[in-house]
Structure formats: C-alpha cells, structure tokens
Amino acid sequence: MSEREGKGKVGIKELSPIDVYKLLPRTNCKECGEENCMAFATKVVNREVPVDKCPPLLIKGHEKAYKQLKEMLKPPIKEVVVGVGDRAVKIGGKLVMYRHEFTYFNPTAVAIDVTDEMSDEEILDRIKRTEKFSFEYIGQTLKLDMIAVRSTSNDPEKFRATVKKVTENTNLPLILCSLNPSMLEAGLMAAPKSRPLLYAATQDNWNDMAELALMYNCPLAIFAPNNLKLLKSLAKTLVAYGVEDLVLDPGTFTSEGLADVLNNFTMIRRAACKSGDEFLGFPLIGVPMTVWMERGEAPEEVAKWKEAYVASLLIVRFADVIIVHSADGWSLLPPVVLRQNIYTDPRKPVAVEPGLKVFGNPDEKSPVMFTTNFALTYFTVASDIESAKVNAYLMVVDTEGIAVDSAVAGRKLTAEKVADAIKASKVEDKVKHRRLIIPGKAARLSGEIEEQSGWEVLVGPRDSSDIPKFLQEKWQTPE
Image (cartoon, rainbow, N blue to C red):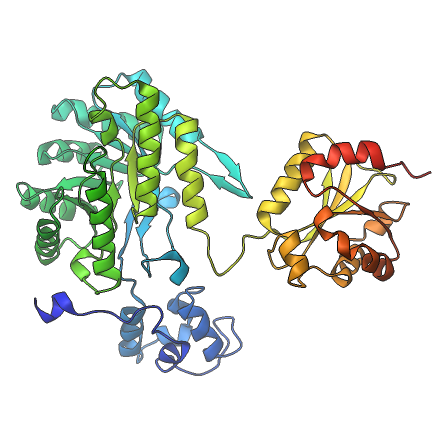
C-alpha cells in the first residue's frame, strides 16, 4: 500500500478550534459576523459556518493558509452534487462514521425509477407522484429527491425520448441507468446540461463511461458487485483519469446476499472514515428496487414491504442515495421518516420557536394551555388540539428542546419560566380569566406556578389526546 493510499486524515474529534485559529488572519475584524477569530474558528470546526465566510482569508497573500484550511476541513466522504439549480441534490459530505460522533450532513437522496419501456402515461404518473409526495413530520416537510431513468429496452432512441420526456416534466435531478455507454450518451444528448448521475461504470466499460462523465461534467457511479477490491481499483483508475465526482455501488442483494450488502457498505465507510482511504471516500448508492428483480411469484404488497425495509437498512448503513421502485406512500413513509430521524443533529434537540400559538378562533373566554418547545411534544399536542377543533391559546415554553417530564426533572421547565412565558406572550391581554391548564407531567409545579404567575392552575391530562375530554369535563367558561 502506498503512502497516499494508506494515509489517514485528521478526524473531527482531533480537530480543535485552535487548529483553525492558527491559520486565520487573526484580525478580529468581525466581518464574518462573529465577535473574534476564535469564535469564528469554533463555528468552523462545528461546521456551523464555512471557512469562506472570513473575507480577509480570501485576499491575496493568504492562499497557502486557505488551502491548508480547506484540506484540513475536507470531509472523509467527498460531497458530490447531482443536478443543477435550486433542485440540485448534494450527497456524501459525511465527517464521521457514526452519527453520535458528530452529525450527518446531506440526507440520503431517494430516487423513484422510470424505464424507457413504460408508457407516457405511466411515466408522467410516476413523475407526478414523486413530485407530489409530501409528509409533515415534527415541523419538517419530507419529500423525495430524484428520478432514476433506466434503460430496459437497450434502444438508444427510446432512452433518449424517455429522458427528454422526463426533463420536460420535472426539474428533479436525474440518475441515468445503463451499463451500455451508448445508452447513456443518448440520454445525455437529451439533457446535456442537467448534470445527472451516470450509472454505472464497470471493469468492462469504465473508459467509455469516464469519457462521458468528463465530456458532460457529470458524476459517475462505479458498480462492482460484492468486490470491494475491484471497486477501489476502479475508483483509483477513474480518479487518475480525471473523474473526481464518483459514487460507489458495491451491489444490492435483497435475499441471501443481504448480509454481505450491509457488511460491504459498512467496510467501505469504515475504510474512509477510520482509515482515511481516499479511494473509498465517496458517496454510496444502494438499489433496493432489486427486490423486484428477485421477486419471483411474490405478491406486489410483499415486494413493496421488502423494498421498504431494505431501503431502511441501507439508509442506516451509510447509503447516500437509493433507487426504489414503489411510489406508494405507505412503503415510502417508513424510510423517509427514518432518514429524517437519523439526519437530525444529535447535538441539538429538535425544537420549535417558543411563543403563543393560536388554534381555531379563540376569544377572551377560551382556555390557555402550555407545553414545551420539544418539537415532537409540540406537534403532537398541536395535532390533538387541531383534530378536536378546539378554540384555544397554547403557550410554547422554551425548555431548550426538552420534553415536559425531562424538562421538569432537569430544571429546564420551572415555575419562573412559565410565569415569564405568560408575560412575554401577552396572553393576559387576550383573555379575561386567569386560569392556566398545565401538562399532567408538570403537576408538581402547579403550586409554584400559581405563586409566581398569580394564575389559577388546572392540572391537565398526561396525554394530549385527552385534552378534548378534559376541557369538556373540567373547563368552565369564565363569566
């Protein structure tokens, strides 16, 4: 193994703000928006701001330091951009192998496939379903990301026409899928400036695929099923050839070979993140839709279910982009919700903005409740209030994104905070009464809240689904 092949990088754990600070101009000019260079260096290390936000670093004379910083901050997994414009998708860019070590960037892109043997109606329907897929989850809108156009006809003209049809009806980024370079060239001619991901180079076609990637400035996937040595060798060859934006596919086998798939994905990511292997430091692509090729006589529902769990496994095991066939909401929802959970920042609880929320058309006699700003708690409570069509005010108290019971135990939710929230919300100007319904899990704070706020406290239900029943039985409209 050469020095280049075996050399590791400074990991996120070893990189400290002082390492960055030493290479900054250290003028404390505040042009970056921070109070001083050390504060800026801290945010750079935490990936909260890019180093390019330092204007003095970009002027002549600092080229060497800038280059050193870019190299120092380069993630073990290269970031690759697919597509152009506002809908372009970034894949890869991971700094760590495991989420708890830091955080994951660039959520796994999900692509729905179409083929060049589908009818125009089916193609348009699948594009529409991909575009329209939307699910609100704890304040986030979950969507799909790409369209994968597969050549199953082996007819260049059919493939070209299909790619043209797709690009005319969506600006989602594309993956053009064929092992035949002539097919991909035909597709590229129909969308020459769309920067699709080309899938895929193999040991038999890599030269022609590399020429297409360079000619059209496209990222290129490498396919070497269950052969990590060949995968790395092809990556090394293509990098030397000049293709810098690569995506790796070690193969997706959904039956007996599933254990090998998970092992291969894990070994590749470990080699990049833990050993600094730059030729394996590229985004990974998984293809759960191979379930349909191995389906046999199984019913469609079984294939969709199996595809959903394979997609979920690949998301957990470091896949940066996946191609699926089923466009049904029930089979897509589990993997995209899982993706959202994994790609939140473990250093920061998922929180909503504190303040007063209005439900329905409340008046001066309407109930006033409060909850914490932990996103899952808030959206659960809000959903239950909306579903019951209750007219009410809901104060969201800042507990640093912690749920009610944990916030009470950890003193993030106190009577003082509730009293301050009442004043800050100005809810006293909106209702004539002074009665506050508090979460059942905050019952032990009831006396203190009354003392601090001067409001009468009603201890509400422990579960927000019981709010309608509680209001019906316990809330008496003030005179």
